[in-house]
Length: 181
Image 1 (cartoon, rainbow, N blue to C red):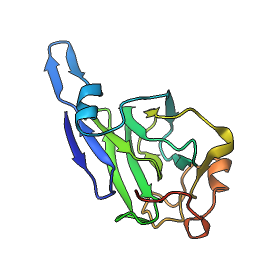
Image 2: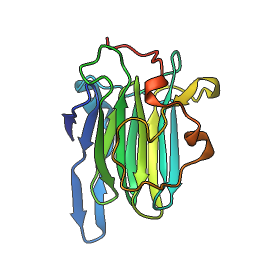
Image 3: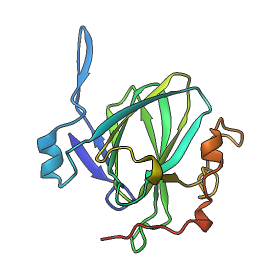
C-alpha cells in the first residue's frame, strides 16, 4: 500500500496494489499493520455507504468535538471528485482545500483527519462511496460547511444538494472548534 500525504496536513491518499487475473481484479483497501506503521488511525467505530446520482454534492461534513473523527473514504462504484477542507486553527493548511479524483477503476482511498470537513461531487450515476469513521454517529454534534462557501471550484453551478446541506453555515461565519496539535 502506497501512503502519500496531501497538501492538507495529516490528510493522506492510500493506493492499494491492484492484482488482475482472468476473473477480474483484487485489491486490499485496508491493512491495520500498514496504517499503524504510518501512524494512522486503524480503529473504526462505524462504516457507512452512500449512493449518489450524477450532479450530487454531499458535504462538506464533519462531527464536532468530543465526537470528532478520522474518516477513511473509498469510491466503490462510479467516479467522484472528493474534497477535504482544513478547519484546524494553527494548521499549516488551515482554510485550504484539496480536490481528488476517486473512482472504482483505481484502488485509492482518502484518509481525512479530525478537524477537516469532507464532501464530494458524483460525476456519474450510481456513485457508491464507503466511509469508515473512528467515532460513532452523534446527531447533536454533526455539522458542516456550506458547499459553495469555501472557494471550491465544483464542476457545476447547479448541483443536486440536500436541504440540510444548503442550510449549513458558510465558511466565513464558522467558528471552528478544531486546533492543530
